[in-house]
Length: 328
Picture 1 (tube, rainbow, N blue to C red):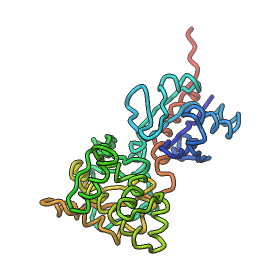
Picture 2 (picture 1 turned 120 degrees about the vertical axis):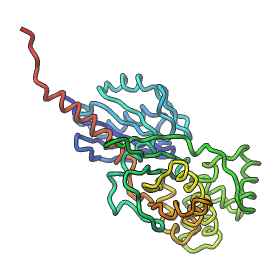
Picture 3 (picture 1 turned 180 degrees about the horizontal axis):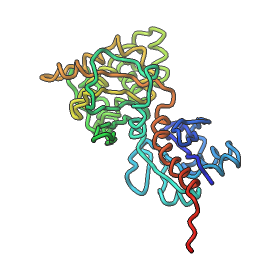
Picture 4 (picture 1 turned 180 degrees about the vertical axis):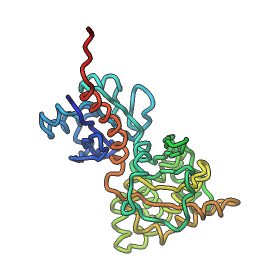
């Protein structure tokens, strides 16, 4: 009987897939470039093909975390023209169990399982036991999720915070927003706070059309224009994270996910991030007390998918162990 669950963290640019058993620990992680495939099915077929017939036969279900809303029957990536129907996906692969979740929902499920080595603190603060936690951050887009406690259970709530309108609180920000409005129309958070947003900020401020990776690399080399662009990005990020922390009352802590957060990790503590995070009168004191951590685990979305997949795997194992009932 199949007893493993295929788990996948599917972003706009790349995807990470693994197998998980009842222990919830991801194993045999494979990373794929989305550009190499026409869609979800093709990528999963290729992944299972690489694992071999025995591994494929052992898979009885899947948990797919996608960079987009996942609460309907049809699931679409926000920043890539990929979509699937949940019932069709389950039938196609013959899975007994199947779930699709937003990528930041999966990330939120994984936060309690992260260790000290998976996190970098930004400033001080002490988490309030049992209080809501905020998970947010830039990658291909800008993801937002909350982790709240109900009795002994933790419940994840998700939204599309990256599509909230972005305003300005300084002359420099007003200039950026005005440029983005000319190019994109109404400006939303992820127009600035995403990988493409970092590149856009740098181009507007310096005139140089660099990729986000190149901007970070130049800042790492000490190039002043790139570092200035990173500081502007991190100031905006701090302000938006502070807005969201107040909205959710995230006194249990703020966790910054997404590939861009990890890439910029060396710059946070010497940037305007924490000042902008706290500068929310009259609630500065509340935000000063709120701890902020960057998630630097290489595959944090898979940790969360593993928690969900482990629960599924337990049901498959229980089914195989259940004794046959005979009617006399």
